[in-house]
Length: 91
Image 1 (cartoon, rainbow, N blue to C red):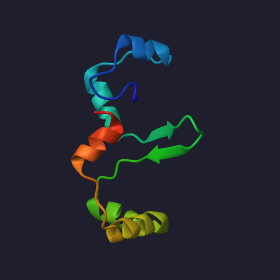
Image 2 (image 1 turned 180 degrees about the vertical axis):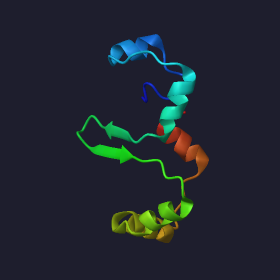
Image 3 (image 1 turned 90 degrees about the horizontal axis):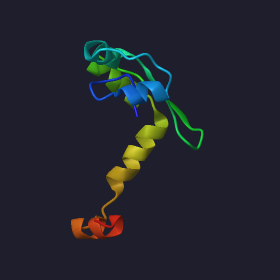
Image 4 (image 1 turned 135 degrees about the vertical axis):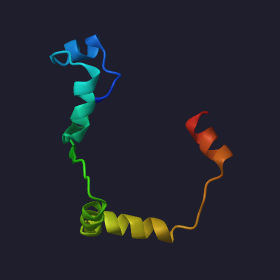
């Protein structure tokens, strides 16, 4: 949930998180801000807007864990049919 971002924030969400209500234009402007995310398991992430695509590519290539993950996925040849995915997800 990204309270205070975008057009979908409700008065209830603002109240729940102790934030002041803002207008849609102000919330849209906040998309340029960094977003700190904390998962229930305690993992923490920082989501950062990158406006220059070349900077994004350079940061991606300099992330050894991400590059290893992508290389591993590129070597995978097995697929799962859509019907099987739906069955596993109970859809």
